[in-house]
Length: 433
Image (cartoon, rainbow, N blue to C red; front, top):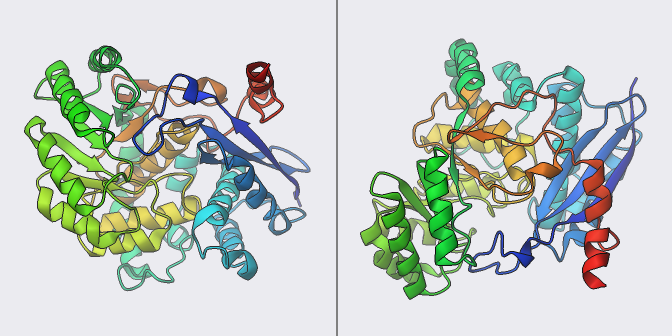
């Protein structure tokens, strides 16, 4: 029987703050980073996962992942849905580590990294990309992956089975469609807050030429600057292209409403993360005040329970799952099912190292096996750092291409691991010198 013989963790950081890539009103100088985990086996292949951070604290995230090693090292390699459900339950059920959450923060993100690495491992052994591996499971196997504790007042196992069984007869056709046509994308690349007006205009024009029909701008630094930048973006892309805005939690309720009313003449499609991701009632108040501007959130929502409350309260118009924020594939499937139950579209967050690579699998699976819909659905695209992955995400004509290589697409290239390891990699030692 194949076993996991080691859990390796490496602190990888990219100096994106030097060019202000990823900059926003709350995070002005991010260095996109990954606490990168490898589950090594005694017979190959290995499994890969990561937790995404933005620099300082990545070492803390790596330490949290290492603390989970006793749950996987020396254990049989998980290969089935039941194995992966059991692993997720064991990791979340560690009572002493759970005390540090529960089911939130650094420890929960560490669990997500290990769970995702286990899914990568299982799908590699099956010879399938993760989304195809998931789409090949029965409704009963998918429901068996989910922890329904704290969810049953909003979604029961029987309701989840009903959603999955409804989509099951037409799965094959949607899988073929995804393979041929891909999945719609939007781009944030023109909109980082640190970019000049010239760079915003140039990249917005480039986005149109590349087939995107939606872009996103960061806002929340200065109101007059935001109005100018929004006006400029609208002039560049015209009336027919959606322009979303993202405040990265910058405001309280009244400020969000006041600020967005100033931007409203330029028809923002949604306001993303207008306030604290934990404040359900504030999101509801903002949604009520700003309709028909949509409210989107999720990249910092810590677990399925907060997503449940946002949906129950009618506080969110767009659910933004994140492949590395919650407890991995299992919990993200629970969130996809919650969104399907409430009829709210899922548009994943992907602004960070590896997130485009990972989250595309979840959206492809959602369309194939859960929601069976692309209405109002797009995946974020940020065009940097893909060259560091062995299975990089690709967008052509404004659509993500379907992943075809086995696994969850999290594996970094060996030269990246040696060059960007912190603090001893050449990219860091040379910059100090």
